[in-house]
Length: 97
Image 1 (cartoon, rainbow, N blue to C red):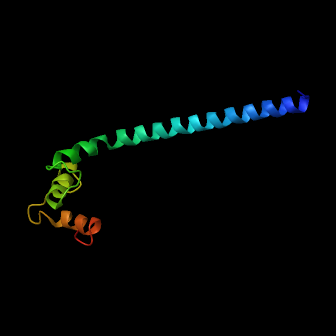
Image 2: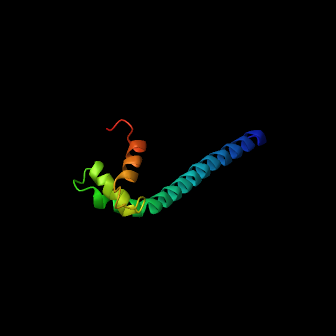
């Protein structure tokens, strides 16, 4: 094998290792980010599961009201108990779906 061919083979092998390293590195970084997101959302997932009474993964209006109260997003006011929750519902579900 000529010197030029040998250098080309070595360069190709180095590039293949670089690609494998890059792919593995990206996978490690993305897995780490996913784990951090899951850890960040763990408490919310627990609260969501507690209010999702029918366990269908979707919360209805009554379950949403309970969720925001449990999260402390709004504090139930004695004079207008649903005012803040209604405001959130109008923002999150403007078409009342």
